[in-house]
Length: 195
Image (tube, rainbow, N blue to C red; front, side):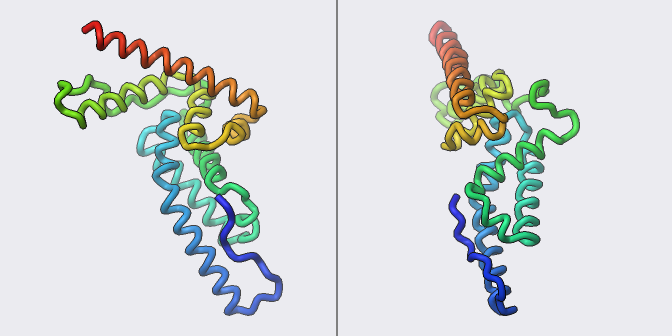
């Protein structure tokens, strides 16, 4: 996301400062409105429950708002605010009691039952979504993280930054994850055909 808020100007009049703050707040409200549910979904991809995802996303957006209000120029210098908020949300989620990125007990899916008979398209779609999420949750954390960034349309450099590794290493992990998912999901497809 590019920075669209007004630039800081030393010697602003009180009216100019108010207008700048008002514009920054409006920008942030729009940003949070667009990004909140995608960030929650991002965390669910990683294995968070809906409640954990909402709580971690809220913490990340609160931190962003606090930064904006206390140090507007620091918020404006963040070159990709979408990535920043996702990284903050992942950090908030991993700080929750009992969470560790490598030894994570994943939350069970709300509905892992088989879909209703093929006539019900919505039930079939929900069953497919459940199978895909179930397959994703079998991946190691690093692979889930790289896939989550990829599904959001973000480049490998974002996952690399989150994992503290090179972009090439992140790309290799993402490709391993895709291979494992393809294998897992094609195995399920073979089971359905043989039934």
